[in-house]
Image (tube, rainbow, N blue to C red; front, side):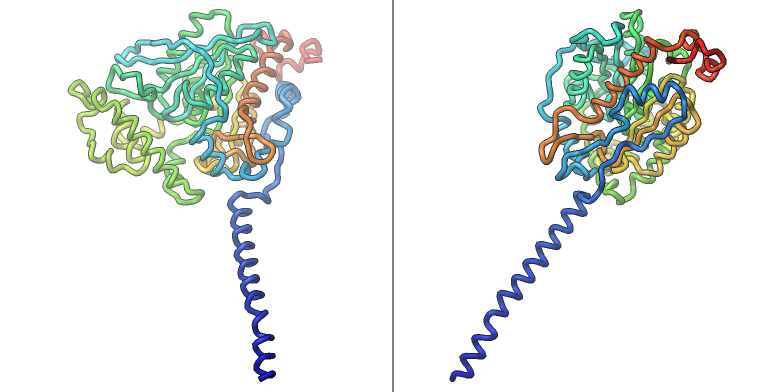
Length: 435
């Protein structure tokens, strides 16, 4: 009896020990998954900058120090490109302001009506000059999006007038007046807005800003015609992909859940298109007569929608032709004004292979700076101590900081550069060097 009792006594304590071990293993597994998914072990660092060794670039980096300092995202989730992108997609920005603007309507030659919102500055610009930011939002976006409102409010307070394009068909309360809506690289509406600003404010200098798809449009616009660069001080493009033709293959891959994002964006595009089905597919639409709406309903990717609908607005014969002619990669090398290209290394929408385009451009052209951050996702770039992000993002600060530096350079640059000479020509005379 005593032997039996002792056996029972010695076996019993081993059971909770075994269960404790299983609990510890489960906790360790969960923590490992969290660390991996949130990328918590990833370091923070300044952006990786590619640029040529010129007086202007050194001046810009000195005058815009945020480009050379660490970008520190929120500690718990900010190192995950997916969470940065998701928060941008869901909220846009936190505690978004409500800037007051006037909506302008511009009739186009094909019967379409372009719209943009105009926001006057809330302070004097530090340069004492009249400067207008002409802004092109991302795919299906407009001036009422939270990230646009936050950026506009910040820019107004720094003395900038802001003109924000509303992509054709993107505003739910504005009806289309022709069988056409925005596409990946159509610059017509942006050109009309820029033309209005130049005519209405003849003394104003322009800062060109594009987000995502908007970055492709503004770079294509500037590179299409040299006259488009007149009165433009600089251009900033954030999180664009540069080549739709090269990007289409990556969008079908499951790497970084890119195929899932493709599906979500396609679903949003379907909703926008179907909300204008009367104007797009009505009796007066000759270009869309062969469009198959059943294919639109069943489309699960942007490529399917582009092939069946979007390319036909401009009469492209194939998807390849559409992507070739609408991508800024064939025009961006024609831009001669200072150009800042910003991308994030963990952007789930822009594959790393596409980043050879801006890096190579910055290596070859004096006017280009390419900034690649470790973190930021797609148009996220949130900042914050631990959990809660700040309303103003690193991206907002970089664009305004770079624009301020450009305006400062324009105000004090050497006289020979004011006459349109290249920087290398200025080195010949010591009077032209920036002291």
